[in-house]
Amino acid sequence: MTVKVLIVDDSSFFRKRLAEIIATDPRLQVIATASNGEEAIREVQRHHPDVVTMDLEMPVMDGITAVRKIKTIRHTPVLMLSTWTTEGAKSTLDALEAGATDFLPKRFEDLSSDKIEAQRKLCQRIYQLASGFQASQSDMPANRATNSQTQVAAAKPEKSFNTTPELVAIGTSTGGPVALQKVLTQLPASFPCPILLIQHMPATFTPSFAERLNTQCAIRVKQAENGEHLVPGTAYLAPGGEQMLLKGRPNNLYLSIEPGDVKET
Image 1 (cartoon, rainbow, N blue to C red):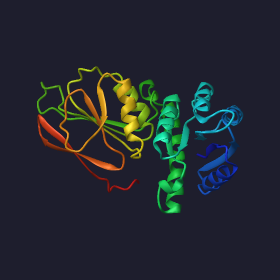
Image 2 (image 1 turned 45 degrees about the vertical axis):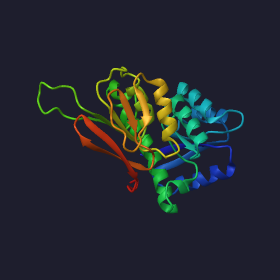
Image 3 (image 1 turned 30 degrees about the vertical axis):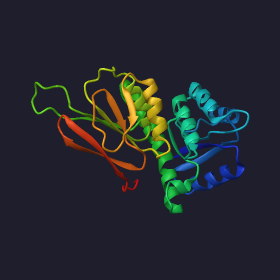
Image 4 (image 1 turned 90 degrees about the vertical axis):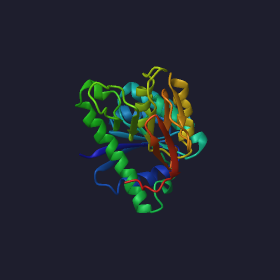
């Protein structure tokens, strides 16, 4: 399968650089480029790309507006290229809410200090978005809604008559922010147990993401803090770049936040 890619960015230098990186992967093909959102919409209608890479800030029409309009035309996966800043985090979350599928840093050095490895990760993410979307098209309708790689785990009861778990853990990857929003907004404030959220996300993004979820949900959502005890009806989001460990005993569980040392694969 050759994945057709549309590159959208107002910088001709960046468009050329990104096209050169994508050309290193035989599974990917750049079929068109656009310098703003309006051009992007026309190119989507003309070329029907499998994936669109989208900049946030552009003249004529910005990336968030373009995503909304593209989603009314085609359900094409859109990969936002974002700055790893607090302001970039807020804009990226707006883009995900508008319909973008995933995001990566615009500075590829933030993916890896090794240039070749950073390029490999970028190309792999583009390919995964296209393959995941195509697979979702043949899924059952219930699975089609999120187009994400999301796993939900609950502690298994020791006895069959005890159906209430002590803890719920949700781990999300590609498409995770949108999937988490869909799941958590359905939970009542009286949800009977704490929830642990693990989403691969940079450290500058997780505070804004937790705050946004908290305003949208009936349950409380917060970024996890070291040493805090778990309470029902609260979701704890692991801080970006760190490890969130569960410690303690039943009915007295608490979190330990430790430096992250697990490399992305």
